[in-house]
Image (tube, rainbow, N blue to C red; front, top):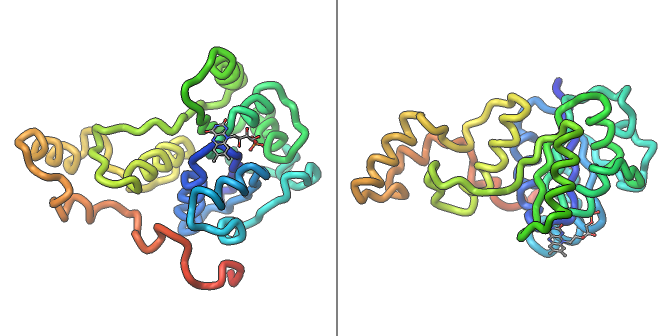
Length: 228
Ligand SMILES: Cc1cc2nc3c(=O)[nH]c(=O)nc-3n(C[C@H](O)[C@H](O)[C@H](O)COP(=O)(O)O)c2cc1C
C-alpha cells in the first residue's frame, strides 16, 4: 500500500488539506498526517470541521512536536509528502532545513531521500523573499504547486476549484482520480463548445455526473469522528 505524508500548516486554505484527506481516505493509500498549531487554528476558523475530525481521516496522525515519530526518519518508506496548505513560515523552514518541528523535518526527509515533495505555498502578494524561498525549495527538488485556480475546466462551484487543486496534487503522485476533466477530454471540449455558444455548463447534468467528488463529503459526517 502506498504511504503518503501530509503536512497541514497555517496558511489560509485548510480545506485543501481536508479535501485531500477525504479523497485519500477512500483510496488504498496510507496517510500520515501532521498538523501545525497554526493549521489547527485555521481549520477551526475557516471550515466546519473539528480538528479531531480531520485527524480521524488519516491512517496515523502525529504531534508536530514529536520529532522522533516514524516520518522523521528516511528509513520509514513513503511515496513522499504534500504540504497543503503551506504557510511562508513553514516554507522558510523547509527551504533552510530548520527542522525544529515534525512537519518541517518530514519535508526535509522527503528531500534528502529524493522523494516527491509537493508544496502548496499560499500567500498573496509575494515579496521577493517569498519568491526566493520558493526558488530555494524548488532547487532542492520540491515541486511548488500554489493554489492557483484554472478556469479552462469551467469550475462552477468552490468545490470544483478545491478539487482541481487536489487533483493536481494527486497527479504528482500518479494517483488516479476524476476530480476534474482534463484539457482535451471529450467532456471539457463539449462543455467549452457549449459555453462558446452561450450555453450554461451548470445545467449540463451529464457533465457534472462524470466527476467523482461526492457531495456527501463536503462537510464532516455526523458520525463520531473517532469511531474509525
Ligand atoms: C486565518 C489565517 C490565515 C492565514 N493565512 C496565511 C497565508 O495564507 N499564508 C501565510 O504564509 N500565513 C498565513 N497565516 C499566518 C500563519 O498562520 C502564521 O505565520 C503561522 O505562524 C504559520 O505557522 P506554521 O507555518 O507553523 O503553520 C494565516 C493565519 C491565519 C490565522
